[in-house]
Image 1: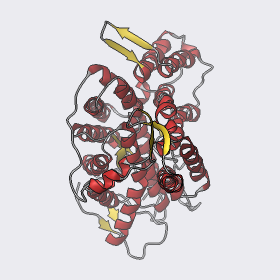
Image 2: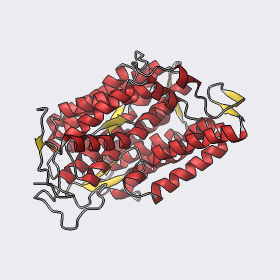
Image 3: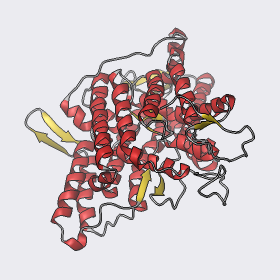
Length: 486
């Protein structure tokens, strides 16, 4: 990809399209890039915080991996790689099983390598293979497992740390997501984090310490909600803390189902961008999956968080109609610079547990319900036992904590077992079923995932819906600068 963009006319009319290989003036491009940073910012550091990984490193590697992504797709797909939520459930299970941060990143690294291999396969055999192996009924079940498996984490770890702040933060999150408009609704999670953080600080000053469960101490203690002692000790500039991955087969199996969610998410995002730009991006689908897999592998190799394309940033493009990859280079560079400020990481790490409780009770539920949205938008028929029976078994096995002990030292359970039952069970059931029950595997609807309040938009291969579109003119068509494509 040539590091050069065609400047557009200075008198470009409002709402006109700026294509991936074009750019606005550099001041305006920097402004758009800053919007992309804000859009990805909240989720990109909230998820590593939840997973117990370094938020500074996650921010920095998101910038590095975004640049890598743009290079691999040859600048054809404008997108930002932020922290993925798809592995949160697996990470919780790994840590509950005594796993270290090295075990976490080792498991995610292998999952990233598998995603990269899937990308290579898709590049050579075509994107249609994804819909045959992972039809909506299966991918919806896996996404639902990832979200609903996290419910005990909210109830047992975050919420008890400060029930009042958690409740108020949850209410604010709901209000921000539905009452705020445009860009502000897209960053509702980020705004809720700021709200809860400030509220906790005010309560510390007004009413003093709280006696509650402390995740740091692992018991009920009397403590302030916000502990900023680490901020003063942190340097202004420096590299984030790195660590090497450590590999354990049982933990790797817990992480692998996250690959399915990433495939569904990336596929939907690429087709959403294709719909908005008017470009045929199916030939680049394999590259996009490969790039995300390599990004996840690289980030986890140094102790960072897994990556994925971000719906929030697609929303910024839809609102501005600026699809220039130059803005993503700016956003990536800004993210790298932020990752080199340890004081920023210390502030993030001081986020009170009650605040995370209020955010995650909404966030985890949203992730789970996206599975149901995949089913709804793809019109999955649960009157058909081929869909109903194996998926029902997979969900209960995964969410209910069913385990399968293999020998004396290995077991499968949770998301891993539930996903295996859903995927293998579905294909076996379909193979054994009479022809009248064997529905077509390849449909026309595509799930578009994400990590913020704009989760779960849907488009179609024919483009009958414009995902994330806001304030667009009714006469937008297929050519000219005021339209989606040329």
